[in-house]
Length: 402
Image 1 (tube, rainbow, N blue to C red):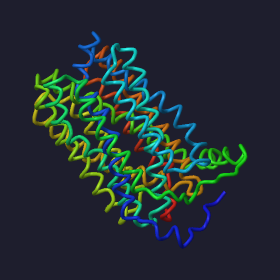
Image 2: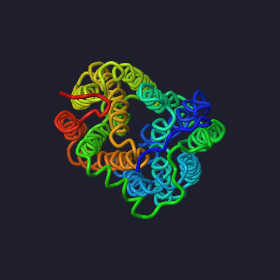
Image 3: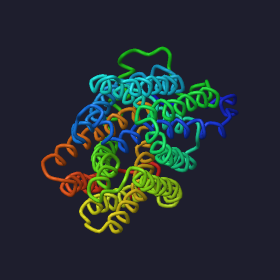
């Protein structure tokens, strides 16, 4: 199945409103994992669980998200991408409410799992809509802005720190995370075009599964999925465990750790925006390979340096290159199977969610058995493997490779 021609009416869609309408949901979707990562110790104290166990709320959420993202590979062909994105944001709103009111760790697990389902709907549809409504030469920049907006959510870390200081982590969910997600839902509902450029209303099950065949029969597409999974697993060493690392290794208070997280997020955002320019000049593959490799090196370094300032420098550089990694690799993945972008990005989100769960699980186990340094080394090695996969097996369909 190929993409149908864009009509004159569709060409007049308010493209300038699409990017902020996709960027704000990206911002909002990163607030729940930010809160959990920053206040993991506090949530654990509430339910009487150690950090390694409490971190598994994210593992379960991403495991559920992985399964649902595969279903999205079918739903994205049948249903309007905008509708799926809005539904995902609604589920994330319900998740934030449930987490803030959870009376037990079991209810917390179930409530936060809805975050994984919502993200599995929102995130791939955001990038699929970029493929629909932006010309090829502008997609790299658009993806960079969306990825950067997601990382910019970490500017909320000081607010979460202040709010949790007054009313605990529950108030941070109800008084900050929930309102922002609801605002992003309203923005997306108002700013995204209702017209779909790829949605097919009458299709057989064979047509639905054709998207999966198109993805998994493409060696480069599969390589992108494997590379994204490995690099995403490595990234968890920073995303999930770096706040707890600085709190426990260097005894830094929560308020100051929130500032560290904020600076790290700004580095990530800068890397995302820089990636758009690099992709425009160098294509998608080279920036992806280099950024994945360098990110892995700094991931291993930050948790194995005994000096605070050197550790912080490694952390910030790792975040800078990780922003480049995510934006460049997402752009590379988006172009692999242009006829089924919704399916491609849904499967990609499944692999990223699986990587999130794997990184959280393996990281938590390594942390319980060994320590932060060994945890970072184990996960970081997966990032090095990802760079090798991208280099040897992935191709940039928009650029002729020799």
